[in-house]
Length: 443
Image 1 (cartoon, rainbow, N blue to C red):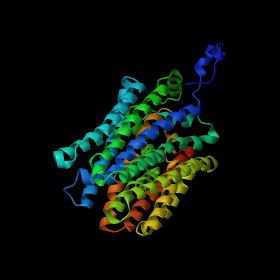
Image 2 (cartoon, rainbow, N blue to C red):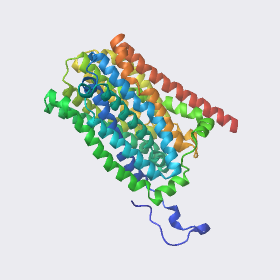
Image 3 (cartoon, rainbow, N blue to C red):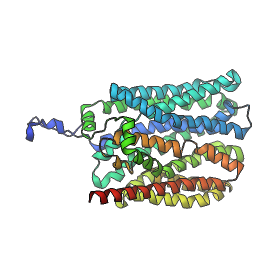
């Protein structure tokens, strides 16, 4: 890893010039993209399998709708466990080191993901299969919480002020890229294998691939986080763990504001990725492999949306961009039921437009209000804010959306999506009011 060149001469105040070495934003961005892409590939491999595979493999005793709801309940366990993982691994970092924490977290993530591939189906070992699946899914969530390395916060602080929107969206690219790879791999396997082979062993291959990708990502990220330049920058920026109790005592309201500010994006996340797969499998005649390939095209639109969000945010501001995309999602929620309930063409329009909006919104969803934490609390605050946003906005989205659609009709899915958009707008308004009150108190 390179850093800003330094000279052996002594600088003013008697400090060695090397002590001012900076980590280039471009190098940090590479680490962020690699790390997030590997995590999201894991994320979507499990998500796709929970809609397409697990209802038949692990819950064959239930009718298809109920089996899928059971599968989505297990899916949510990772998001429930994620904050626990964050707290646990922050303690590991504080006691040992950031490198130790990241190595342990990614090792746990990789072994949990690969472990799922070895779990026999319900027909072979009965309820023990469900218990093992739930255990591995929970450990995935703990590991994801522990994989927070602070790189996105460091990137935001090191980026030029007029380009912070652009650099902030780079880490978010991992989501659509990870989805594209995962969906394309499942589509290939589903279309290339017989139905019996796919449900017997074919679905397990993406979990092995996820393990291999995690190994590569681990070494790529460790190469950065254990360097002196990185550690020096993290120390100078005060990006170190703080006690969780102290964080909530001093900045608790900002944790919740940050979580709700991202709610529209996180709710949208599963409404256009995981939920439509379950709906197509249960209530339409569409071929799953073809449906997945349409979603792959949508993933590329999401990439474009994420990139565009960086340009828009640098021109109009990150918070304004997040608010405008929440309004767009609210409008989309009114058309979503009609599109999703229409024929194949209408459903394709739903997914493509939805993915584009997801990219525009998600591109600025992470860290738009983390400046409220200040220096000392930013590292821990950003991690737990993200955890809560996933838990509140995304954990139960496929389960709730499918249950609402099946019991009450698709318009209720639109209302569910609308509630996320309204929550985002309300959180941004509260955030603005608090900032104005603080400015008045100081002025």
